[in-house]
Image (cartoon, rainbow, N blue to C red; front, side, top):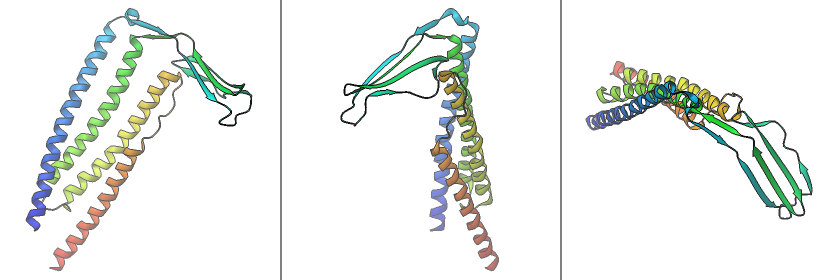
Amino acid sequence: MENSIKRKINIFGKVGKIITTVIIVLLLVAEGAMLAGTIALAIIPHDAVTADVEAKANVKIDADYFNMKDGEIKIPGRVTVFGTKLDPRFEVKNGTAEFNAETGNLHFDLADVIKLLVVGMVKLAAVIVALYFFKALMKAFRCCDSPFDDNVIKKMRAFAIALIPTMVVSSTANGVLGGLFTGKFSFGSVELLPVAFAFIIFVLTAIFRYGTMLQKEHDETV
């Protein structure tokens, strides 16, 4: 029974290590492609390719159905898109609520594409670093005699810690990316799924550490 469990854990580690290695290789290829693209675009004059866009939106709502009263509703705050002021208006009149928004001219050039690529590379690099720690954890599972091995616990804790800067970098990159659209940098929203995943890993680390203590006490007693 014990050998069967050990074999399954080792197989899990072996398969996990192979899959993680493949993912890392693919991400490194993507990272290299983005880097090459960034360098190529940096050589080209930024005004070699430009785009000018104007956006308009018109939304109508049945005001009677939602019991809306006539009048204009002011939208607080200054809304910008790529540094260009967005002029939103919301008015209820004759049983119809109408929302209108339009922007001035939005100008894009190759510099904007370079910014997007750089942000993407930073986020991708953070993920790759975390995957290397996960690969080390899978390697520990592949070689361990027990899931409560000290090396497994160390690698698990290291992976959980590695997720923290990954989330910080990702959130900051999201803020920078949002700044490209709004013209104002703000710290990006924290994604709940990675936070929950890191929390679960920390909890599992504590459980495994407790299991190691119990196993040592059992071995000493025997």
